[in-house]
Amino acid sequence: MSENESIQLPGLKGQRVVVTAGANGIGLAIARVLHAQGARLAICDVDEAALARAKAELGGCLACVTDVSDPDAVDAFFADVEKTLGGLDALINNAGIAGPTGGVEDIAVNDWKRCIDICLTGQFLCARAAVPMLKTAGGGSIVGMSSAAGKHGYAYRTPYSSAKFGVIGLVESLAKELGPHNIRVNAILPGIVAGPRMEGVIRDRATATGVSYEEMELDYLQKISMRRMVTMDDVAHTVAFLLSDAGTNLSGQSLAVDGNVETL
Image 1 (tube, rainbow, N blue to C red):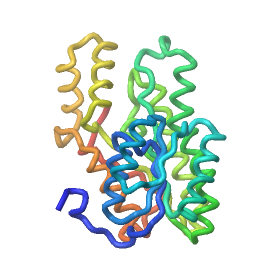
Image 2: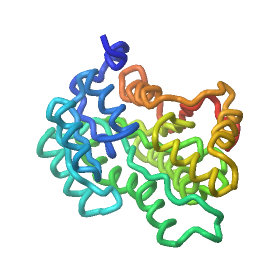
Image 3: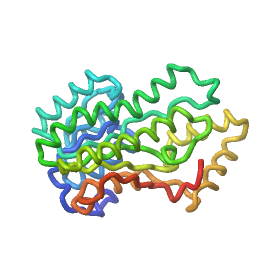
Image 4: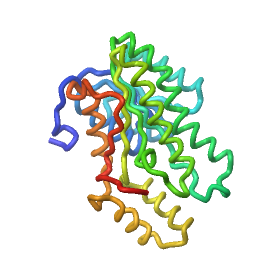
């Protein structure tokens, strides 16, 4: 039995779930866990080759090339979701980018806008398209991917941190708005997630601050109470819990999956 199959949660089998940026990284880890639990999946991503691989792995799920910052592309994707799955029970707003690293005076306006467009506006656009289907289904769940950077200020990562703070505001507002429709809305705040993306972030910040990669990595770990990074599966299993019957009364919450990041 694989790790993804080891925890069986009630209420996930047969759920119709969208995972944005579901062909790589945390999104793919979430899709794998939900697929193992018997969910019916629709994923989108901007990486066409990765989508093809994920589709083959995930039992031929709906897989569409979609830029979540493009309103027309988002609407087209959710139209395909409704046609293929017949509706929707959950949305995992996972798509995001690291954004630029640098001092505020060095960050290009277009880089700022691109980070906000994907990390925050993309979540709004997907929620906007998903909510009518969730209401028709009689309720469901939305999970917005924030970050430890949405809880702590993050020097030299201003666009990313600002967007992730915004995700929490979006989630808490939608939880109040949609609760009467039996739609739960929560945020996940991953901490330092092991993998290539985090390695790139550490490398860029080390360069921006003039220290070695090893020194910057140690600096990150010293700010985590558990003194270790988390895994993509740690995040994925928390998402599965929120979608399951076990999470039926959790809404408006920001759940940190981070080993207790004390500061950034």
